[in-house]
Image (cartoon, rainbow, N blue to C red; front, side, top):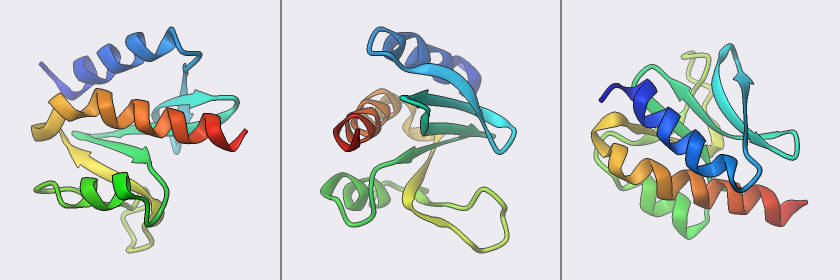
Length: 106
């Protein structure tokens, strides 16, 4: 499966919870209540988990995971973690956690 295929599966599953497809920085994204919580950039899924949360720290511990730097200019978003497709089996859970975080802030 390609990164797009994995993203589509996550998007389809989360649509039942009110997530809608959109764009963020010209990339495919998922939004809830007008706020992006997941974004596909190449073979990375970036998820907004909240800086310092247990989920954020645990996700950064995954091999190849890093803070999401959409510009590629060394200015990462502290709340976001980019997870490579090698961990695609985790993308669903991570996106659900990010969606839950967006919903709790509203």
